Length: 228
Figure 1 (cartoon, rainbow, N blue to C red):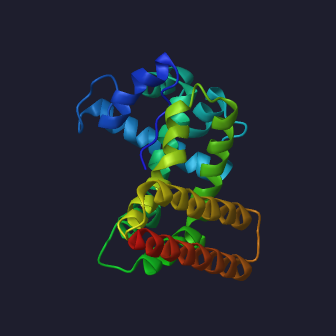
Figure 2: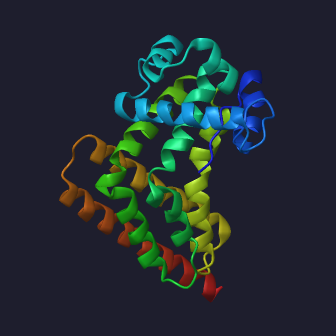
């Protein structure tokens, strides 16, 4: 998942730099790019531990041993810092980066893929990332113009992958897209329950039952489509 905060001119200017892992046109491996990555690593350490609710440039600069001017030089805006930190944080949780590859694998039965995807999402090792993700998501909901691209990605990326997997089973594409959003809505809700210290065993049962019920409807839809 690569997210960006491109709802503002500063955000759009930062996207190209972030996508290349550089700042100000610095080439990967250059001194500026290396300094940016080291600074970003310290920022990720901070936000994973403290979150972003009270994040200010001054507080962050003090915490990571930098200053406001250097933060803005490398990241252009507070919004760019937050999105870059979320992207970089995800790299510390390999399962969260890779689970969509499993969803896409047609060699594995669909039910196995979806249950495995949830097992990865629900892994307690990923909880620090989920806490940060939902905090950033909540902020973006209040500042939609500044985080327009981020919200667009969150709203479609997982659902599109699940929908494609379901459509490949013979379900009409529009129906598959609805199913994709349903399963992601189930996952997101159960993620929130886990963040809220919900009982992992109950959550696991809810995930399995919810997924199985949805898969039963997928099979019904496929059978109906095949009989037309």
